[in-house]
Length: 302
Image 1 (tube, rainbow, N blue to C red):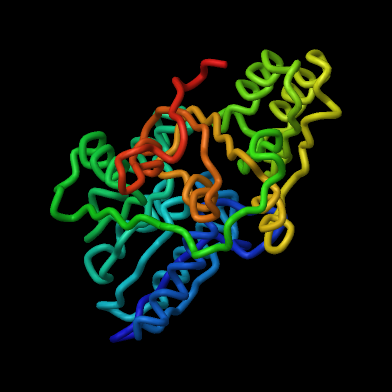
Image 2 (cartoon, helix red, strand yellow):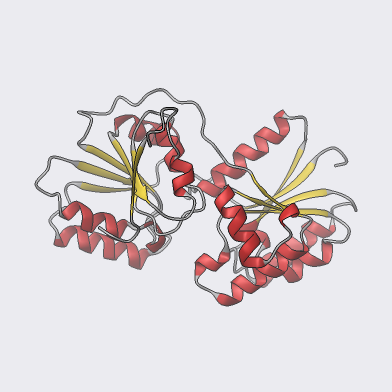
């Protein structure tokens, strides 16, 4: 691995049943490194990260111990940040970098936040997914700015979306969890129920079943059950078809370091309505003429 890199990723990043922006980022990064002439040794780490069981912690420890001294190692932050006791002992012999998709402070757990701080302070380098996220990590964990880097995921080129009539087909691509704000979306849609629209929500429903149930209840209470399709996870051609049919992409998230679904929609010429929070203003950006290709609205406000 003298010219290559070992990349530790959560097991199952290619599982179509559990899509996420982090998984897509990891897979694209593997391909980009290989294309740049840096062979990648991919190490899949099974476990309920960032809170793994003893067996999975031991498995990660064995994987790191098996790497020769001086190996360049990139570890997905979901795996690394909650287990400094496993990762930090290798920091003096391996060239460790940690890729942080979403800081653990956003889990609302002070203990996890402290564990993440220990891991990141020991790493030779930290990679964030946006300039906003980079600055936040430096500030929140008091990291050396010279060791923290922003590598934005961007988006693949895509054909322009056909849409419908330019207004009536909405698409929300996000896991149905409290952070992503589907409850806010349900309340907002209830206020425009007199308009002719339908909405497809593409994303896993099993990350927080109780919250998904509350969202279903909100939709039923507002009489929107037939107009909002909680379609579950969509990938590949099914997701491409959903983007192609959309007139407007919506992302009512309460927190977002980057927001890959924003750039995926914009790559297809689809305008975006999203929260004015965290890294999203930078992701939405502006067209060459200075006009934003969408609209930012206050978070958590239907």
